[in-house]
Amino acid sequence: MTSTPIIKVKSPGRICLFGEHQDYLGLPVIATAIDRHINFSGQLNSDKKMTIVMPDINETRLVDLKDRFEVLRPRDYIASIIRVLRREGVNFHTGCHIEFSGNIPYKAGSSSSSAMIVGLIRLFVKLYNYSKELDTADIAMLAYQSEVLEHGEPGGMMDHYTVSMGKVIYINTTTYEVQTLREGIDGLILANSMIPKEILEVHGRIRPTIERAISILTKIDPEFKLADVRVEDLESYYKLLPESVIPMFYATVTNHEITRQALEHLKQDQLDLKEIGVLMNQHHERLRDYLQITVPKINLMINRALEVGALGAKINGSGGGGTIAILAPGREKQICAALEEIGAACYPVKTDPGARDV
Image (cartoon, rainbow, N blue to C red; front, side, top):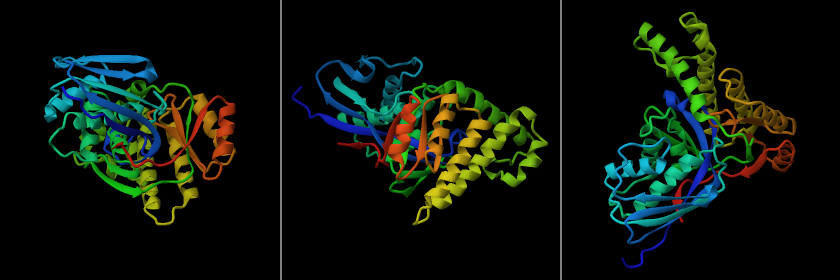
């Protein structure tokens, strides 16, 4: 094979601002891509295999192009990407050499896995000259299929759309409609507790509980829709539900209302950052007290950030550890210094335009 061009792609991490543990229930979310990235380079060659070098985790993956991956190993996203893209019509006709590395915190709720998947999909469709024109929403859907649907995992699609499309976006997770709210938000900080998140354990506890509540209410009223429940109606629903599901049902409904309020604020030309901070704090209180997805160090970090002057702070991602998102315009240095004193890693971040070719 004659020399082929090197293709380069970059893919960002993300912060969930509002709607944590809502997207897999068909409720909306508001998120932003952030300027921490995974950087990819790839080149076709005449081999009969794909070589993928991942220095961040000290691994090299060799993929036999004859492998159809009829049985997927848990969380083998490279295999699931290839399965999805083959069904889409991508022809992996020859080998390639790929390398990627980055600075998105790993297993920390800031979408390092989704960034990897979105980036590889962009790289593959460029490398193999896929004839169909794919926009950022198309790539997001292929990434969602590769990470969640192929593996039967319990997550939603927020990560894939945010990483692929960038900016500050509102995602209707029922219709897959995405609305860009703003080019960016000033004063964001991502802070890592250095405690790995527990996505499968947390999702495996919360999602079935909420779905049980939905099932009970749907049997009573076949027209029931979770998105239609308002905070003022909660007491009437409590009478119909077992006590064990009420805290999570309350958190889901009130977090939906917080997301609606945040949407209206973020649509305004002049953004009231203090009010956004208040809503972030309210969102986190429900995640902490009712969904119980935090750990002591996360709580300590958030309390410390607020003491030092943050307008708002919340856990970022599925929970059980990982990162927090902080809104603190003008106080980034002071807050990072305070969090580093208690063993956290801290990164002031800016909004990113999304996954792209470079």
